[in-house]
Length: 407
Image 1: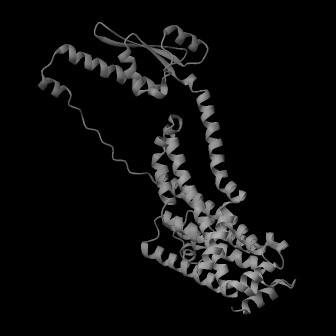
Image 2: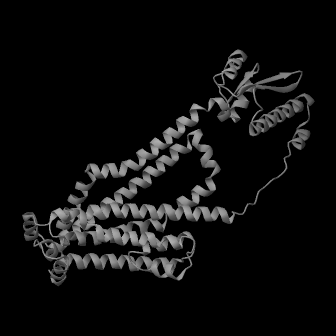
Image 3: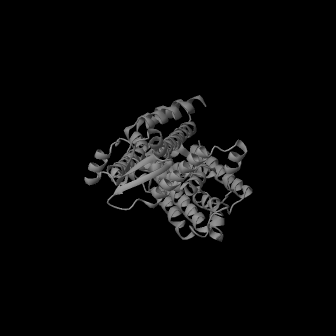
């Protein structure tokens, strides 16, 4: 077991230290950062043209209005002359003059166009609120009268989520999950197959097998790759969470998050549940197939071809999901949700659509885990017979000799 962990750790460290792994992990975040950066700059470059200035001889009144409308106000403009110049140069949408004269709160808006309806409503509410407070103050009412006037009506909304919103959440969750599974699967199928195939025909393998069992070596290799996959998934989860929290604190993006919160939260929930386990296990079983294929190639030069069986099988499962994305209750979906190599695609589809109970999910996971364990155990038993074949015979002959070998 000690030697197995040595192999696993060596495989893990070699993979995570490679530039290909670093680029693989970092590139999605770089692309996201660049896309959001461009979007942010384009949004902020024209943001001042949509903002207004607030001018007032009453600093407290101006500060109070700005505190409730920060995203719509250019706070740097404090004088009428500056505001007029910026409006003339199309650097401001307009400016608002607030004042209190003869116990009356007033506002005057100057612009080339009418004020935005939502901002206009905000101004009207602000004026009504301050005028009411000023009226109460001038009326010198008793505490009982003040309490009566401060009584507020009750308004509650009981909104049932529409079926269209549910459909959008389900479809978006399904496509994100399936695409991530497929991309990670393709990546690690190629990495594993080439890792194994590159060892074909090297004398170092004979030396290694003289000091440890081939089965332990193979299990160590697979364990190392599993650790790499788990590391990448964890980096994506942590990095995605950090991006989410950062964007929520930027006013430009906060509006979008607030507007689509009812869609974003369910999608994240569909990704960060048992479906994440299916993603991990699905990649693992295809990785084992890739290792098996890599050990069957005739020479290291054939390594690029080694991943093809796993990739084609993954493509088959991927494209099979297309006709059933809106039919999670179909018999084919139910059957394939228990079949290894396909369950990682089809059971999440049923989970997203709330068509699978805890017992069905548990049974599907049990079948998948047992298949992975038995498959890995069997290949580890014949691994030496597979990896040490260096003759340029046909694929079927090498497969037959490998399968007949037992360590």
